[in-house]
Image (cartoon, rainbow, N blue to C red; front, side, top):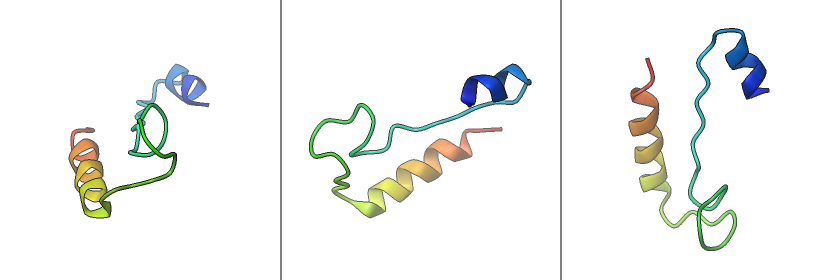
Length: 48
């Protein structure tokens, strides 16, 4: 889906959230929800 959206000229952005994707450790485990929220805010404020 992301490739098709990008082919239409839109920007596509995705994060590798802790506990998912390429993260090490237990799948789905998020050690700190507060840090997760801070990381998401930091990453998504960079998108313009």
